Length: 237
Image 1 (tube, helix red, strand yellow):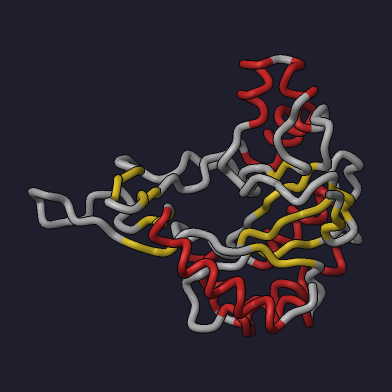
Image 2 (spheres, rainbow, N blue to C red):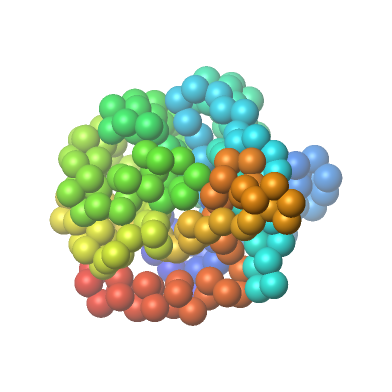
């Protein structure tokens, strides 16, 4: 069942969410067998930032009755490390590559988009405006005006498809999606994790090292379906 994702042809409609599947580690574990039976129609990378990031302090994970909290903090090699180390390996995958990027300012996002604009290995870009562990990500994706301004800054930087990854931590994801579409987004993806906190059992503070994190799992599904329905009614991308 082939589909078209913002101009990217896919052999079927299943792709991974950013950060949930390490294709490089899987290739090392399974060798060419992974390439022969790759599970997704496209591969979405973990988030790339301009500078390297170590991520958030531990603890980073907390189990919930109907899901889990994570506060990983986007650890990555940075743009230069990604281009030198990861991109050559990911380019060998038998499916289109979509690179997820995030910046702390609009200018940083524009620099990242520009860096990937002329790379033939990259089929499209996903803009992470929804990560609940990083203040700038939440702000850019929670307000329609901020989302519009971000798209105005980055849309001229590339002709590749731009996918905006929406945050569920907003009063109206439909308004944010509509702003993204009106200002040049080719598609939207949703939802990311819900901002949440778990208490530490003894010190009266939060369990996670960063304080709050993102909640995922079965408990989020009903929220996700409601937001998908809202966004689907508002946009055509």
